[in-house]
Amino acid sequence: MNNKLNWKSVTTMSMVLLLALTACSNGGNKAAPSASTGTDQGSAEGTTTFSYMMAGKYTNWLQDLNWYPVLEEKTNTKVELINGGEDDDAYKKNLELKIGSGQFPDSGIVSLAQSEVYGGQGLFIDLKPYIDKFAPNIKAYLDANPDYAKLMTTKDGEIFGLAQEYPTISNVTFYRADMFEKAGITANPTTVQEFTDVLKKLKETYKDKANFYPFTGRDGYLKFQEAFAANDNIVDGKVHGIYENGKGSDIYSPGFKSLIEWYAQMYQDKLIDPEWVAGTATEESWQTKMLTGQGAISSDFFTRPSWFMNNGGPDNDPKYSIKVMDPFKDANGNQTMLPPAEEKYRMDRVFVINEKAEDKAEGIIKFMDYMFSDEGRTLMDYGVEGKSYKEEGGKKAFTVKFEEQGNKPIGTPVWNFLQDRLTFPVPVNNEAYYQWMDDLTKSFATTFFDKYTSKEFSSLKYSTDQLKERTTLLANVKQELNAALVKFISGQRSLSEWETFLGEMEQAGYKKLTEIDQAAYDAISK
Image (cartoon, rainbow, N blue to C red; front, side):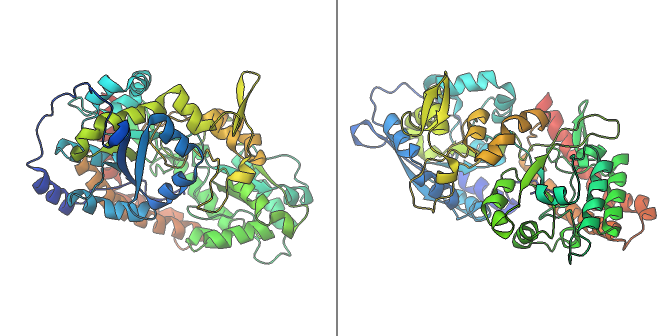
């Protein structure tokens, strides 16, 4: 999750050239849509019928949702779901070919950059005239959320796509509460130093357990960068570090070197899992360690504590217990804020309408507009009153439980309201999202994210050329950065070579990346 490349779907030069050739005759301004004199938008009896493409895992989830047929009924719409590739990676690989070969369906999911490149070439419809004429709820949302409107609107005032708003969530640090109790740890750490002391106490308590490393995980191991003021950020209009919505690093900050020195000391004291640092840990090996007591603390997606409790933890040990700790305070005693798990508006989840589906555009945008309405939001966020929720004291309360509905096999009709999953890109309802979780997750999510997840990170809007250059540079810089940090932390390279390391990163393109990010920020902030 952390330290992965923060790029979504990128247009390759060859395909851009291909599209430029295939689309050159499709450009030109379109007349504003006229008001429909009837209701027929693509099929008989007034039903709007259109095709919609996204990754197969999302179409599978959507087809199982009990509120989905209700949505089609209420909007008098029939949506043909198209599998564009089983997962996100496969989808992205197929997407350019489908667009370039004219196989893109009536609507689908693209990146924001793709929406504007191909929209500018005439392949996707400018939605703004349709929104102004047929979509009062979408228009109201754009008016109420100027940052969103600015991201979605081109410099010429066009809107080629609508992006998904993502729930306010962050990764959490969680721990084996039963192991803390056995070690005599009665209070959670509030600073990095207290956390280090906790790790040492756990290591001493379980010194006879083979291959026990108290701090373990999967994916990127660089956690708590915010406590060292070492993560990427934007301060007073200046981008610091390679911008990844707070999940990346600012290697030039004094705190970043302190962070690496701390990790090197943890590694030397055997407080952190060496497989995790080396990048050889797998999801399965990490899960096994946390389930069997070869690890005691981890930092990961916020539903993971519940996963461990429901997937063998108490079976291995009746006392097995997972709890969540608050983020640390920084060196000055100030409470740190966690970077969001994803950017607020998903630039890789943008809904577009094919220019070839212009005759259906009115019906499609009306369908989308319903999902921006209060009634549509209630249906997607809570379901149907009397079946999945009830009104209780002026508030909505679920009458179905995530524990019973959330993990049913694919192909089973379910009530499920996981707004982080892609269905149709619409606004988020954080309160409903948190309420839907299992009891353990709900016990902290309802207050944790509002209190500790930063709302300060802006989405940057890159041009296609910037994205191309950035993606190439980022792949190279990430590889060199990760290799260098592993050597520092594992003791293969002396920290006395830090200035040399910074020069190597500059040679690899680190500063050029920050310049691209700065230009993207400047463009959107004007």
